[in-house]
Length: 78
Image (tube, rainbow, N blue to C red):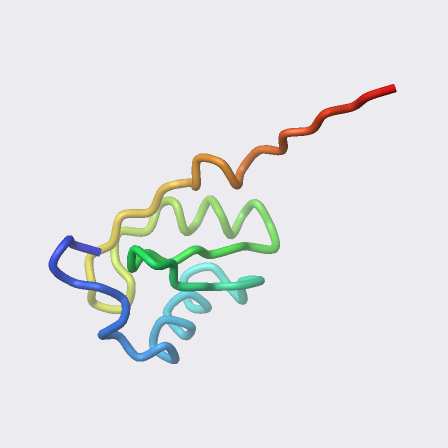
């Protein structure tokens, strides 16, 4: 969403119904402290659909992948 607006002003049921209409049921959808939504999908096709989205309900949005949650960092020791 734009800098002036936040998802706090939108009804959570509207957000859920809009996400379901765009990509189908998602695994989780949480609001972060900075006001952004963190959406976890069940399938990669849902992710692709959401990445192409430009509006949520009637609000303009910008969708991007999370920088650190989309990769795994592991240490294997013997």
